[in-house]
Length: 168
Image (tube, rainbow, N blue to C red):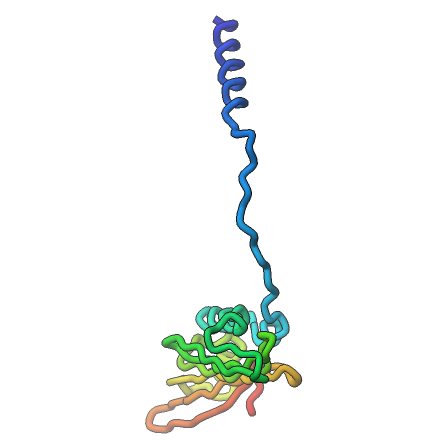
């Protein structure tokens, strides 16, 4: 009985060795292009909400040189990206690098640092709405700010705070 089982196992393994096709298959060529890492490193915050991160990655990976409107004659191109939560207007140079962006997102999830700073400075106030803005410049870097509308009973106020929780 052992010899029969051992024989069947050997035949089973040996038969699978001959199932492979000896001819290699050639795959199509893949071109890998680097995306705008400088832009992503400046604006990509661990604290940013998911929709913001996704749209910023879309901006970084967009190849303006492959667009229908691309011509070598122009120095820069302006492209707008939209989602329901906000928008990004990006300027690209003729090689496809991000030169500057203006980003605006409404009613996004606030980072814990910002929420804690507001709760500490304005203890009985509630955040009614917020606007998250990012201004990126290739030479100056990124500036991220939050404009918040606070409410306490009948009173309302507007405050401006950066991503580190410092009031402006």
